[in-house]
Length: 152
Picture 1 (cartoon, rainbow, N blue to C red):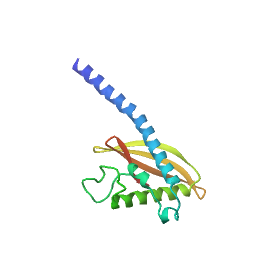
Picture 2: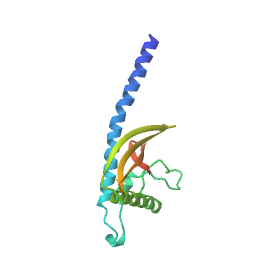
Picture 3: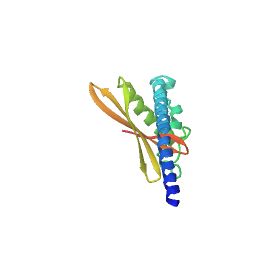
Picture 4: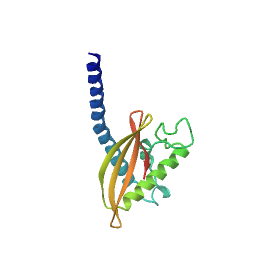
C-alpha cells in the first residue's frame, strides 16, 4: 500500500513539473518579446540629450554587479549607477543585435537545473550576412520573476 501511494505521489509530482514547464516557457518567451519591444523603441543616439535610455529594461535584467547580497538575486535598479551600467550595456547589445538582423525564430526552449537554480534558455536562429546563426537568451527564475542573465 505504501509503495502504491509513493508511486502515485511521484507520478503526480512528475506531471506537475511537466505542466509547469510550458507555462514557464510561454512566460519567458513573452518577457523576451517585451525586452525586444523595449530595445526597438529606444530613441537613437542624439535624442534625449545624446543619451540612450533603457530604464524600462531594468526590471527584466538580473543584477550581476559587485554587491554580493544582491548578485544573482534581484533585478537591476536603474537608479543605482552600477545597475544603470549593466542595464545600458545589455540594452545596447540587444538593440545592436536586433538592428543587424532581418528576422529570428525560436528554435528551442530548454530548462537546466544547476543546484537550486533553474536556467530557462531560449535558442533563436537568425541570419546575418546570409549566414545562419543561433543565439541563446538565458533567464533565471528569481522570486517568481524571470530575469535575463545572459545572451550568447
